[in-house]
Structure formats: structure tokens, C-alpha cells
Length: 512
Image (tube, rainbow, N blue to C red; front, side, top):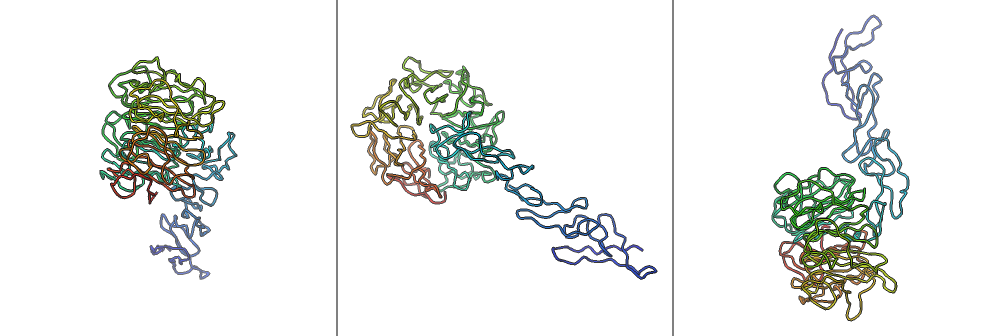
């Protein structure tokens, strides 16, 4: 005798609807179930029901961060986004204690200054604060102060303590990355999709932005020279950069982008009219896909200026390529451009490079040498005092020492450079700036330009990272969670304080 069970919704603890017929000779009840249903005692239950799974009608336990399932008569689990199955439970995809589908505990990293991490389902490492990913593992600070905070022409981006990328400011080309199309974002907003990634670095270029997450490169914003993606048209939210993997660092200029790979090679794309792609060409046509920079191996730090780029291959060797109209490539004998990397000749006496910053057409380096610790020298365009030596030359091909008062500035651990100003983070956690100050970008409470270093108001200690845009500057202070402060030009909301009023001294930014 056949009966069909009544189709009822099943919930944890709910009773099964029984389909019973008259008993046989012994008076028992029986059930013959339709396809997709199975017998449970004297009733029928859906085959996929986790409350009555298989012929034993087993209730499947529900894990945290997931739901119970019944597949082919066996209990299983379906984990929420960002989690994966580990036995009968769900583990965080980024957990180094249960990495990937094999749920492997990640061993301590073999490199110094790092901690274990699970990235894209494989054991990896994340560098400690003050260190940056490089081909050798984790290298000391030439660009580490720029990893979590970046500034472009009139927008700013940063990685929050929760690991989410947020941007704000000018968004006419989509450089804020929230996908909204709103021309100006006056406060920090999440970059679309960044919450599902594990971002390691964010970079802000002229009117586009990029980031590194799980070994992949993503860019968004202005794409007129294909500096974001091979497909023409601007991109208001992140798109993956094709053709490269194991990406460690990103840098972008006016209309070109470069990526540092785990092999120590560098690839660039976008506008290359003055050699900024580094492939031996000055072709004005856009380079649509990442192209290897010629004659450059073993790089571990990468930066980009307006129309030039530089890389460090060790702590005393720096090579640059691209535009050289103000001597910014660092070789007094070089011409107006270099289409492949040339050695910077201004570092011959340096024992170790601490930090590097590239502005529109100037370069500054913090360095150590016998008798000098954390001093800064600059070269290139200096007409607004951005070289910091008390002078304002149009082009400075030889390096000059940055001064604080009448003495050399010392104890600098990180640098950031804007269009025509430069800022330094000191070992004591304070910030000093010099150069153009018409929009308050030096943060000293005035609008007066300075050709030597002056203190930023209210930032005498505790700062962990700095970034400089064209005419604004931001700093991260503390770590649990960090406090964001910005100052300078704010006509497009690039300070992130909810207004469009420029500030002569730092203001704290909410929502980051």
C-alpha cells in the first residue's frame, strides 16, 4: 500500500508528517515513499532534509558560520562566505590555524619580521608593521610607511584596522572605487568588494587607485591611458589586473602604473611617452598590459612620481626611469628622459637607505652613513622649497641636505612627497614638512611656504604612517585602532572630514 507524505516545512525539532496505511498481518504501519523522499520509521522525509538525513533519519548538527546539509544520505555543512569546511565545523578563510580545504595549521614564517597568514587558501606570511613584502621576505622600511595610507591628486585611500579599504575625495573618474559615480566623497566610504579580500597595500595615483590583495593586483578609476585595465573607459570599482601574479607592491603616477612581483621584477603599463614604462620605448601610445621593465632584477621597493618611477634593488642601490626634466632621476649626466632604469648617482656615500619619496619632479631619501643617522637629501625640482635646503632652484641635479632650522634634519624613518611639498616621519613619531603651503599642506597652522622643515601642529609623537597628495597630507597615529588626521587642500573632500574647507593644521577624520 502506498501513501505520500504531506509536504510540510521542516525545522529543527519539528515533527515529521507521517503517511501511514493500514497495517499488515501483524498490525504494524508501513510507508512507501515517492522519489526524492525516504522512509523515516513509518513516515517519509525529504532526502535533502538535514533534520532527518539518510535511512537512519539522523539530525545533522549545524556549525557556527554555516548551515547543516544532507547530501546523498550523509550529513554535511555549507559554510558562509569567507569560511570553509574543516571537519564538522567552518573555519575563517584567512585563519592561519586551519588554512585551505586541508585545514592545515600554518607554520611560523621562515623569514624575519613576519607572522603566519593564510592567503588564497595557502599558507603565507604578512610582514610586521614597519616592514614591506619583498622578494626576500620582509624588508625594512623604504616604503613600509606608505602601505596602509595613500594620497592622489585630490583623493585619499587607506586600509582600516579591520582590513577594509576606504577612499574619499574626488571621484569624477571613479578613483574612490565605491561604484557610486558620486563626483565627490567628503567622508571615507568602502571600496567595492574590499571587505571580502585581505588587502596588504593600497596605492593612490593621479586619478586612479590600486591595491594588492592575496597576491593579485586590482585597480580602479581614470583609465584614459589604460593605466587601470586593458578595456577602455573608467572603472568605478576595482578590476583585476591581468597577466601578473604574486604581486607584492603597487605604485602609480599621472597615467602609468607599476607592480613589484615576488620574483623581484617590475612590470608597468599605461602612458609611456617619456619612458615611464621602462621597456626602452617612449611611444605615446598606451601600453595596455603589464610589461616587464628592462634590465631590472632583484627589486624590493617600488615608487612612482608624476611621470617617472624608481625601484630599490638593495639598501644602497636605487634605479629610476622616465621623465628627467628637473634632474629627478638622480644622475646629473642624464638627459631629459631615460626609457630604461639608470642608477641614481646621488647615493654613493650612503650606507643604508631608510625611506624614499617621489613627488611631481623631485625625490627625497632618508639615509644612514657614518656620523649621520636618518638624514634626508633631496634633488630635482625645488622651486617651492620642496627640497628643504633653504633654496628654491628650478632644477637641482645634485643632492642637497634637508635642514631643520640651520642644522641637518635627522632621525627620519619614513617620507611622503606631494606635488611640491615633502613630509617626514621621525623616529619619535612626529611629523615635519617643507615646501609649498598655499593650501595648508605643511600643517604648521599657516599658509606660508617653507624651504626648511617645520613641525606639523599637534603631531609630536605616535604617528605610524604618512601620505602626501598634490596639496594635502594625511597621517595615521596609534594602532588600536589607528587615528587618521589630515590637513591641506580640501576642495574635493580629500581630507575626509565631511567638508570642503581646507585646513591649515591636522583634523581628525571619523569613519576610518
